[in-house]
Image (cartoon, rainbow over all chains, first blue to last red; front, side, top):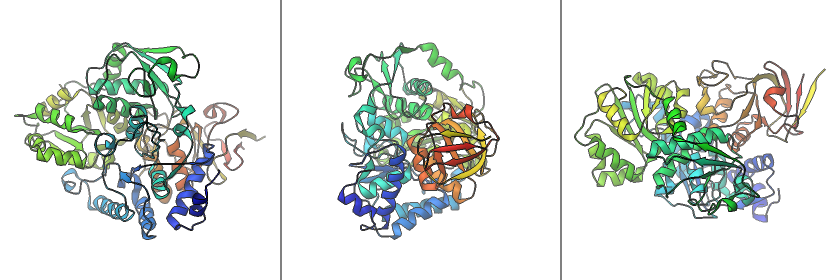
Length: 411
Length: 135
């Protein structure tokens, strides 16, 4: 890889051991993906929940922080694994909370801003078109690339950290304009009606597209979706297919026309119909079954979604044998407190968690501690993830999820 | 007679081990019980099988970014695969392999690696030269 003087200096260790590690790490990755050089990035965003870090990862962060080096560009964090104001009640242990406290201390010492959110594109500082960034959550990356026109690969925690320490990332994948052209075409013949249906559509396309290196192009969307619609659509597509970028013709910034988004003539298209949406959802049905835990998360809820959940819960009580959990970012939670949305949600017996996301919270251990088995959510992403943790997932829209939480069974 | 497969230059050191193969995809978060060291996702083709010290041979990576830290955590506990071979890796698995020191290779010239290598084959993976030898 071609290195600038500054990059050579970091690699040589002249700017501290942390930056030396960061350069060596990124050069291994860059070689794997044939990067010629590095590109400057304006922000980094890192997943570092204690479940995925483990004790080894926490020690790794502490060792780096002990060098005294700090990140050199604005750097923020993905959701935490433990809401330190509410964890014993969920069956989370002191060991988990201690790992969380140590992670926060190490990240803070490195100069990282603990935003604890996977909706930074809605709440913190959305990147602009052409902005090179190093974002570390698949939902964040796919939204930022596709809806905002930013340039980011999926960055795992170590690589986000390396980007934050150096202000660089290897120039490969979606940092290259030629890798952002469409590779597949999907013709949608049904307009999704709610967040869950947007998620299902994303899940179907993700499944069919199948790999990080595909760029699905979607036609047939008749009007501009909301930011929350795109959030669920992208998060599910990234989850099912490891897809980091899509284009919707006439909607997203790099796809003004069908012709502009492909190099050469478009490929033949795959049609997606209303029946496909229903069939997908049918795989996650379980009408009449007792529901143990209803989860709104993955991604964290926006202020608008929080307000919708509150309106649906007003004057109702969650069934005593069902737990209803709502995950949002610390900044949205602060707004919800001020606007009394939190109070309205929690008056029903539901719980708002701050700065966490359910599936990043030691989900297996929580299931065992609480005897949870059947999980219901309106998030297509979470029902894809959670079965590996021993849950039986079901999928329904927000209204049906709340009706089920109140009834104690899937309606 | 051993057979040598050619792939893209990869990550990590030369390792020898036994293949665990499936025409399926991979995420450490979605698919594994990392405490027990087995595939736990009911829909995964390797469900119930131990991946510890095996050379995983799979189609591609899927899902989220967590696998990057998780490979490091698994390796630190001695509960990791020895190497991972993909038809096509994604960025996360490459980054995670780099941090963890787990060998990883992808893009095989001879075709679909999940067909070329059989479950139980003894392999030598050399990421530096981009070769995998089936012994």
